[in-house]
Length: 267
Image (cartoon, rainbow, N blue to C red; front, side, top):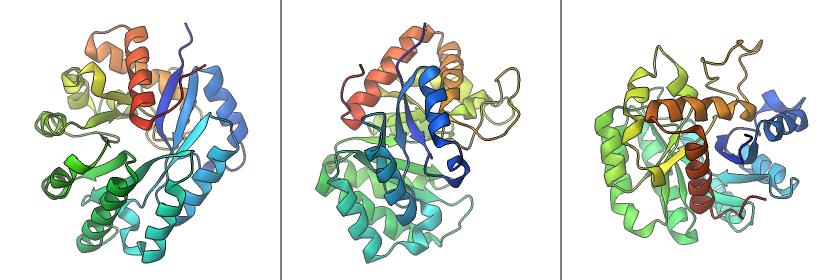
């Protein structure tokens, strides 16, 4: 049975898709991925993501935000750009925003400032927020938690943490986005073991394409570039790890995504 899946995080504005983006979208549709949220993560990709979404008649939607890697580049102009994009119908969330102390491509002070400013935009626009956190749990919670009463919804995108942080995020009311990380027997076994903790109504799935190709795909793809057509592999592994049927997980994750982002019904 072909499902009507929603990929809540695909970096389709990435230049690795410039030569075959339409084919990538067709392959996704053929695989049952009906809707994709194109992640905005910098001034340039925010504009590109919204432009892509506006050309597809409801297949693509986009987010607008500045990834912590680019926090040093967050200017008043960046802030104004996100606000101007947020009024577009195709822009359905603020982010990707948050903290990343694993790489520290931007100084922590810049990350903290950019994160706080984007949470303010999410509050003012009433758009949900698309969150990134890596090796920065304590500071992330310290900034996010006080903002939550004024935010509509929030998702921990590409969650790769341990059970303790998962339980804390769920207690805070966050949705949880699961990627192909769960398909990685080297790095993702702990995630495979705890994904059942997530309630049905908080579970979302995503590819994070072109990153995080699911390692369980057989035969192995010739390229390392991930794309939305591989979302069913994430779905299958999540369903198996949760001891639920694939149809059930497909239904709840699609319903959750449409509710979270305020998307029209599939059809």
